[in-house]
Length: 153
Image 1 (cartoon, one colour):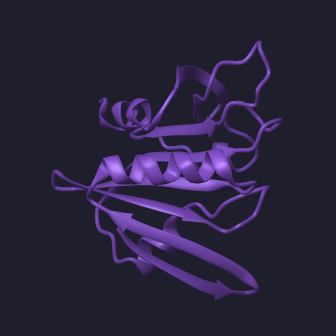
Image 2: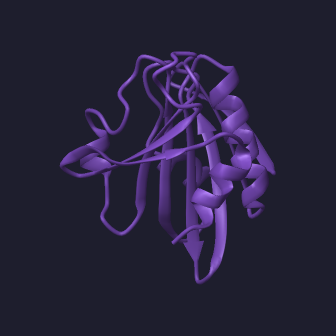
């Protein structure tokens, strides 16, 4: 996985890319589960070649839409998967500007780690669209579940 770190306007951004989707899923899930900041996992398709970008702005309340990391890493292709994490207590699905960025031709989703509340599931992916915060919920017990979600059409 190619990884970089850059300080821009006092925001320390960390990002990396790989064509190994399993590695990307593992890194994203581990980071989202073990830190107190939001993370991003985008997958780009360039004529059948998929490249994943994992990124963070080290901010508990948001993460860049991924274009910055895509450009800095020279990743080509159309974004087909757009996932970011929310911390426990955050919105289970899209919120705020997420709706403006949601595109119908890709998967738009929020990942939330297990918050240890018995009524909630282990880890969850909450898909959203331009005008609905939660249209589908998928359990994510481990990185393999996340990888299967990424690979599913």
